[in-house]
Picture 1 (cartoon, rainbow, N blue to C red):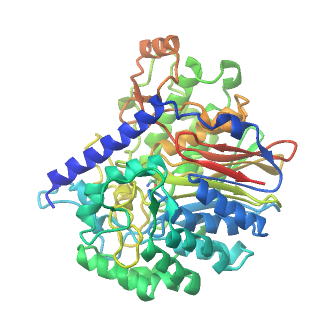
Picture 2 (cartoon, rainbow, N blue to C red):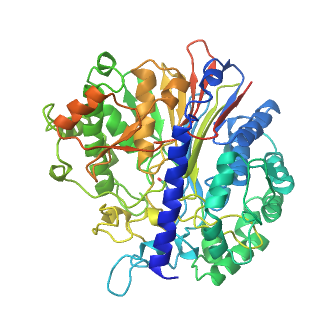
Picture 3 (tube, rainbow, N blue to C red):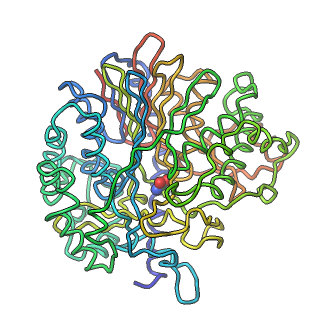
Length: 574
Ligand code: GLY
């Protein structure tokens, strides 16, 4: 397909997404559910996810005696059915876990580049990046990790029977569920794309338009889930489902092979852990950049009197922006898959190093990003990831962020198996050292190599205070993930917000390049804007930043949820 056509489609897609976000903000949907969530605190367990149906599935598992990991496995599969924008079987993600005993762990089920991938696979003969190939269609997909991840998580920590965790999703796929108004709009907006990439049709296409309340049934996905229920890992990476995936690759000139599927392994990794004041931050290590960047940000602002300045005061915004500028510059140079690139984690988190990075920051004027050297930012990052947070009665906690990358991934539904291919290959630096269409430059650390995991920003995080569980937090949002998690944490710890208020609060974002401060509408008052502009900050309003789903444990031992009103997100608790 000609690049120009796909670019147009991508732009149309992006415009639809922006229009949806703007429409929702103008229609007052933002913040709609606050009161209800705010007043609710629970003792026995809580699930906060992007979908009320998925949260309900998770709660059902908790009530059946399942622990937080059981519930997380069930929610991951449920989201693949009821939130196919980002919930997935064909994508990947990260889990951060903290047991009630204080044991911590993290699981990397990020996708990998296929064995036949190569550093220059998205370049034309003149060496120019054909970026659309990493965004749409079969070649955009990395080897999926989600099913292997869930099997690993369940084998290590699960309590209930595996089949019991998949059954609710099979029912949802087989009998269908009612699409929300938001989902109907999104599906209608993608009709042309789905038709193009799925010439034989998919469950996401129907005659006429989708409207709120229409039932979406996914029979092929239900069959695939049954294979996973009955055969675990082999039900996806081998047998009929794997055959369908390979046939799909052959139809669309994709390169994932049977060997790639068989060889895929999710990896337990030592979480990245650091302190902010009296809080212990347990977060995701590479191949996510999120954990290291989050700790760098927290350490960069730790010694300043944020509480006295207040939320979104000019000094607060300036400090946070300057910290973000420096941290995102580091992110691009030094972060990549640790199995392929030595990530200098200790140096990046060294207190003296961070102090030194902040030493050239001036209160009088913005530091131009051009003067902040170190590395290059990874290319376009998509915002259609999803996060869920879960706690159980015993105090075990799970924080999972999972993704197909773009909304509905590569837009290809595997024929006969009913799940979407991811377009995660676009998270690699398609052409290291060369600016992409947004003026961002990719780093060598994140160049494509067979079997390598693409760099991520996903930041599933758990926080302890005084040795006890304090918060479970995470969000989708591409490059804005790190700043959204950072600001949500500050909102609670520094600005005394409830979990729901912290999640709902407007966010702002800076990522070094481009040298712009993005703000959700009405984040900053006009005087603050004037002051910051006078110092040289280029402030650009935009739609939603982040979609945080989080849980706070109060000092009285209750769970307090924060479900992001920017989406259909929902708390289920008892
Ligand atoms: N695909 C978004 C991320 O991994 O950061």
